[in-house]
Length: 154
Image (tube, rainbow, N blue to C red):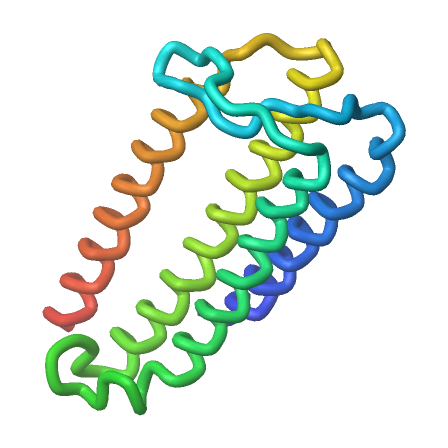
């Protein structure tokens, strides 16, 4: 659990890279970019290119929220319903850090995909990313539930 701080830093770096990607390619982007896709992968909402900043801003807001919750985990849940041991508490903090890393990666891939579609370099195949992302979230959760249960038995 020692590299949790590295995971938090890495997710923040990925969010910064998302902001930088938009800034670097700002002049290459058309005024209208795809902002939402249906399950067929077709664009069903267009928006101003400034709306691209919503994704990394959302990631930054989530980073601060997750970090706040991870630091206050003992005060929020003082071993009443969840973590019953220090190891379980560390596992829950690690879970929040890794979920934030995962979310920041998904948002960065979303920014990259939208920019690629807007400039004509990519096709509308982002719906697969959504299904893969949802599947990976469930795998992540199952892994940490198993890890938490095994620490409970120790």
